Image (cartoon, rainbow, N blue to C red):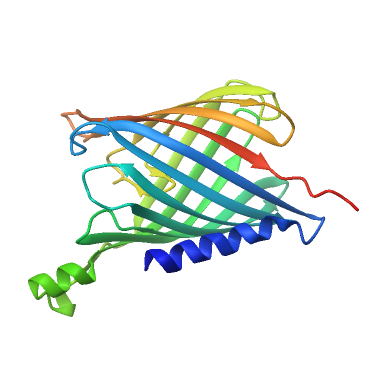
Length: 248
């Protein structure tokens, strides 16, 4: 997707924050990543922003990612859209989400993922399971410069697995919390099933609508194989603002 069109869609979503319906709950999530890995050639810095709009059992969310410092010469490095619905099966609360993610991680190649996930949260535990379909595609610049035919411009992967399991130290309504998760899924990145990521996280509620959080991510290569290798790590710091619509 063209970055200008993507950003226009995101800003269009941000307009929903105007609280046209008092029964709705807009929200904003902004964060920055600092880290390094085996291909970053030193420090990389990314920033991302999400706008969400919750009404009843439904949640719509859209976000984008920007590379502030990296070696791939790509400033706009991610765009996502998702829609969720809460429901219950015999008093067992669940959330189902459909999503679409585009990550143009270089001038020549982009990755697209779409799929669905099902997650369950309790006071201390969280579980996520899902499936996604991945496509690697050469961008128009590469197709023109290297004369790549349309039949050879894309590679599609069959259905892949999404998963996450986590534990929180405190109940979810506590003013502060800390936890640990094992997952192959992040906002703009879906790893192969054999390369799970370890995430340590902490949060603190500054006030009822404002939450600050800090995460530390560790990525390995071949974690489920006999030989486990280091790949990279990054730290994430961000703020979540659950906007309250004021009554007249």
